[in-house]
Length: 397
Image (cartoon, rainbow, N blue to C red; front, side, top):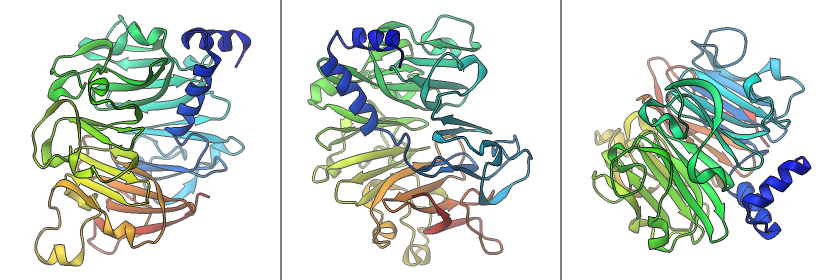
């Protein structure tokens, strides 16, 4: 950072270098920037090694694989045009991909912003700068995603309102809304902006928010948010104490409360009360939780076998695509005898969803829909999905 940026960050942190340190440590803890990771997009996939090499595979109708063609790829291949560039983070959306390098350069309109994270919604994109400022651009509907401009605004603009003077450490994009994990003197907090249908903004109502608004329920629950995840229609947070909260649309049991009801404010998942969570991932009505002992739990929509619960016994009983209303241990991942450190789910209105599980040793496993090659593994004749995790032939360590 420049001296001006450092000074600006210190001011946002109330003039406290201690709070600046908390901001930096929180950003490192809640993301996999500069670490190996994989992203399961709607029909295509990106994997990034610890050395910064980006691989792409799957659907390529819009050139989203970055290989200079529009042909599908059924096996992971390095993106050759990025040779010599170290990628630290990837984000995907419908027909598009964004890759962030260690220099922070992304697109021409962002040339003066050192970007460290990107999040893609259905018709909008958000980026987070190194000093904790959030910018959004493209479609914002009536809410305009935090800045008073035209609905289809292609110029990245900082969010207005409360987050103008509060540093953000992580952003997460749903279909039509955005969440931001912010660092304040009182601790970590979550803000939301965008479409409020289903209660997914977390304020106890279903109304839209034109500028970021603090979700106050975490203070009521005495939870310090540590990781935030935005599914297409629902959201989740892992607290510093390991508790998991979910809210928003509850279809197929994706909130983990044993029903399909909507929740308009964060609610603790009581079925995980004996679990200390360290990571959460959300997709299109699906949720995965990783615990500190290495177990992985999933719940929600069972379509495309993307929850990982499907076994030969379940298929024999005709429950191949059954929904899961309460968190269940993903036994197929437990049987790998590998510690899972990251889960990525398809987060879009795309029914052929798939899931990635990355282990501590850098092995990547895939399951769910693979009709476009997005699993990175070969399927047998007439097979369109895999119920059991299969290792992809790349080493991300």
